[in-house]
Picture 1 (cartoon, rainbow over the protein chains, first blue to last red):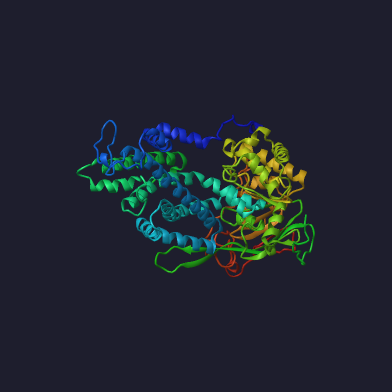
Picture 2: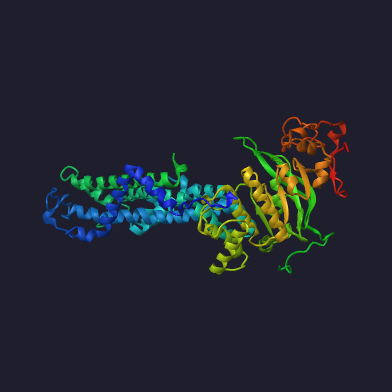
Length: 292
Length: 337
């Protein structure tokens, strides 16, 4: 009975983690992205200890100073140290990137799984709502929500969450549809497992790689959205050290003190690139089917 | 078994039938995808008015070529898909009339083993969780230690080691995975198991092991099998009775030996003659070849469905649909009898 001799122990429990590690090892850009993101996280967490300056303390005698040894990136129009404000800004950008992305992902996944598994009228209704959300130009919808609710970080969370769930719901629904027809789901049904348990134990865990990939691709997108909305003046409000907001102010001093506008722009660019590189590797490792 | 709130059918005739299928039909709507055009609503009759019984403790085999509705019938009997019309009566209980909760409880008594051992196990669940699921679902036990003991016993029963409990399905070979699927199916000690081509995806060397396992389990647990297959040599080895399907209809049904030694329907004859014979000296038999492909089930031929491929089709076959004589133990739906 050769059949009874089990295969040598292949430790594949951590296959998800293992896939990630190999994907990052193979892809240098991804490693660079991971380094940037880690640096950002460390900066955001340790902000008060990294900088001797207070990001809110106005010092008009030192305004628009050029970069120097004491102010590495110079000071802004109110004499605040620019680097300090940008480090504190990382907190906002990360929070804006992660919190609404998570909310959108949770809502979208729930809608997608229920819609795909239950089907019928409920599916139709949920997907038409998703269509409506997807049909709106996202920036415009965010603008409309921010104008209605007034600019604040909390409202920004709401606006970005409202935008994001529909895309996730679509992807997760189609995934659920294909999983629902798989034999292990049929087997669970023939055992008599309740539908709610099937959705939680059989469908959801098989959607998680895709959900993680969508999450990593959504974070940089949201960081950009926040920056744009703040740049337009309806995101974070002064004196919050948001990168977008700093860039807006910098625009006015673009010729006299160009560092105020350029530095936040570079921070945004590098951060978004870092997340995107990382997201690519995560996608390659977890869900190659999502590749364009 | 709690029966008090299950609906009992009044028309039960004999008690030795575990499953009675009565005029069962299942249509699928096939939509012609025409952009900007009207949708054509063709009906595909996958299962077209079948009536037969499965006796307690027997192995009834369902044979026929791909697309004849075998698997659909298996799923209909387990109520995994709902019929267009007709009834399935399981041990006196009309299952189409059950509410969700009663059906859920009845599922304890009927299980399924699938063809593809790779997609029939959830890739993200450990073997212990796969085997615990039926036990937890039907409140046999929720105690982790007890579940482990029971899962271990199930694994041993199907010839796998205890160490497999903490592994994931992809760490096993096809044959081992099929054994896990079988262990899951017997976990609740059901009465009926629908085996949906359980051997087709396995290597020939492993087939005999699995088929002997299925036979042993049947004797030990006094199971009843509906064995769906297109492999006649396996069917001949395992079956008590055989039911031959063609395009959603039963063309012949009878005892295993009767059907093999004296096939009545020309389709059955051609199927049996197509089975390879290992001994060259015995190969002298006449081969009954059938021509062509199975016609489109969306638009089946009039009268007898097999007439387009039948070697002895007559004019009556075109106008009149042949029927089975259900009073006989071995009968075929053919005019030439």
